[in-house]
Image (cartoon, rainbow, N blue to C red; front, side, top):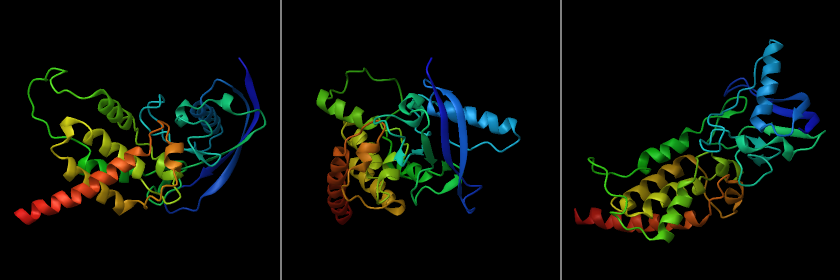
Length: 257
């Protein structure tokens, strides 16, 4: 198994939300090239604990590119240099012996730092709470083919549903916008028949909740480039169209009551 040697890590350390942050330098003398990036941080933390020092705090859970918690800026790029890859899927073979790697938390006003590399991404949850669901009657499960869905529609909805809510789009955006995230969550429901009943209510509620926390999209496209699931910015167009329709439809509904 090949190994990398003499890796230097510059890691952001911050004791709490209101504390002064700083970069801390650590050296990894040797690490297997097939180790994941998070496994490399595990090795470092084990060493720190053995030296009676405080371990570096970072988010992680599934380590399979599903949960979206492994949110790190690596050398200034969300999730690191490899496109279509979450931090937990990034391997040390991407780097070379002697490299210096800078590791930071998400840099976005909506994501305050809790400690070290961990940020509070709960504003994304606030968006989901306002409309990221459908209302369905309970009871027995319907047949799988009961509701016909054209394949292009199903494919587009499933592509949008692949969003793991990591927040890389926000961290990469110069405006700190969450339009790709919100667009994906709206599109994957609004494109399907099951999501039509609440389509306009959902669009209005989720977009306006997003605007409370995040900046505005100016179509730079960094969000699409940083997304580990490579979600297309087409979902933003779907979101914008449905939001405009929602404002017109909901306004007319109110005028008739």
